[in-house]
Image 1 (cartoon, rainbow, N blue to C red):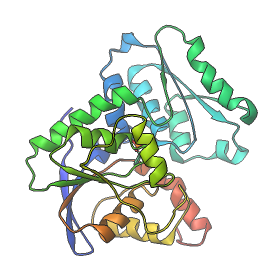
Image 2 (cartoon, rainbow, N blue to C red; image 1 turned 90 degrees about the vertical axis):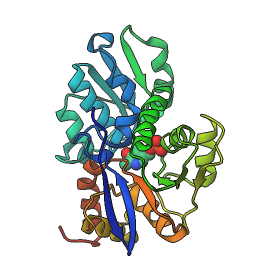
Image 3 (cartoon, rainbow, N blue to C red; image 1 turned 30 degrees about the vertical axis):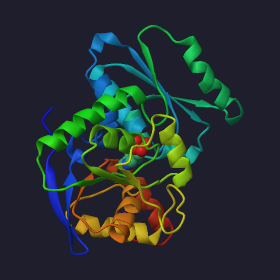
Length: 286
Ligand SMILES: *Cc1c(COP(=O)(O)O)cnc(C)c1O
């Protein structure tokens, strides 16, 4: 794998650099690629089945499906019961994952938690479970590879930025690059929740700066200001995802001044279905 390239964009008159992890692979890109790095470097014969679980919009699900297709591993994905509308969709991450060969199994809501907890107890040989949000210890190594690429680029910036869900990406990146300031912001839950998630993995280092959004945003809900940032970024030449990136760009524009290298975290395949939701709300016409 060659290093992902770095692009320059102008946004609101400011220059930003972007590490193009979105270009790594159409389905297996962004931070999900980095988090699956060690599994991707596992020999085909080493495993036969991957099990994971979570939501149907998940970028991790799509990345795992693409990996399993490449490796010829079986991929079983558990979700809570879906609506018939979700199942029928012919776009978005769920649809693409099924096309890549993912086997989907629904678990009724009332048994779901217990079922997931029991998964590990009945593990067959050559089977690997990836918890929601990605495999943690494996992720650390993949992010050290990203850190090395950033160092090798010898850029004239001292600050990086990447948005957080579980915070795994931002935390391991900050730990691997103590000489840089790493900005992030919570896109799922609030700052307190993000800190708790991170602290469960490692003590939060001083060079990791969590920016607080000016107001509370609910994850995966359409907001006109997010759509606006998405469109401005697209005009400046790069498509970003609609779930995480707008919140990150918003706080960067409002709360920072220096030149920043933004680590593109992927996820643009989810935009198809998200844009439809913006359309339903009358915020755009497609
Ligand atoms: C998964 C994801 C994130 C969040 O990554 P964490 O390591 O869970 O913080 C951010 N951006 C995109 C596009 C994602 O798919």
